[in-house]
View (cartoon, rainbow, N blue to C red):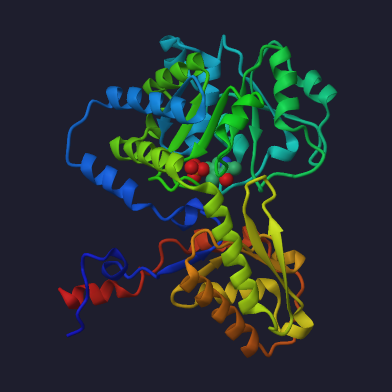
Length: 413
Ligand SMILES: *Cc1c(COP(=O)(O)O)cnc(C)c1O
């Protein structure tokens, strides 16, 4: 009989291993969690703990690391957006907290640049509306001026939300300082969704009153959302865990995981990390060079992180397949390779190396070469299917048949 390691969830549940040559997307299990964070969570999980006390300790640590006055840990960054908006509407008023999402008697409008209304897996505007607030979009998709933001702010404005992400439009919009300046001149607090970014002291200096990020993205923590900012607003976030924030709460493991990840973050040699990323990107470039139909280009990060990625441009005529097809083929193997394909319709894939060691880089490059070398198609299709058509197909197919080793599990037991 086939022997399986039944304590390994990949074997037990028949899960396909994933080599992530993309970012640290939540949908791909986010960042690989570091051993320090796993150890901290494992040491906490068997015990009872006073969660209020744990939150106070987390607040002090978040403040120390970011330079904010205080901090709060919630379920995830998306939940953090809803919680922060709720906090700006209710303040420390428990009657108002219990009243939400009915906002009668409260300021309930949230200004958002139209180019920031993006879909990170769900829509930013919906995370705002979930609190009961009304979203007021400002400007057009590709531009927003001060006068437009000034004109959109009314006595009903509770907050301004600013999104810092590669998902947003990257030109023609107000930057964080300008956005905050206009909001602050009218007494409106600024909430920053910086899910995958990490220059927290810089964001606070630029005028964010609350900064939210995913503990499980850049920082390598367990799933959680961290909020850092002004003490009165952070306190109001805490109030809202007795209301709208309840289904978004972090458990002890999420809070301790975020704390351990922050402490590790402080000790990390970031210059060394950035140099390693550049070295691995160059390694990937050298391994892919000479592949027919591919042109390679090292690109800086668009939202200001000190890292580079490798753009793999696919010339369909020469390669025999399109960038989209290459991305699809990479996702079909075992293990499956995830590569950033949002620009496939522009003819390129973006390879990130933050989750890969040298062996991983080698593996991904070999697979790319192998797929391109085997491609014989004429690659006539230029436009890949619309992303949402693929998403819908996947949703309608759920739950479908379980992964293949389910039966294997029974056989092994
Ligand atoms: C990932 C992401 C989120 C959501 O983060 P979660 O922690 O998964 O809830 C929100 N906003 C942006 C811009 C993101 O990239």
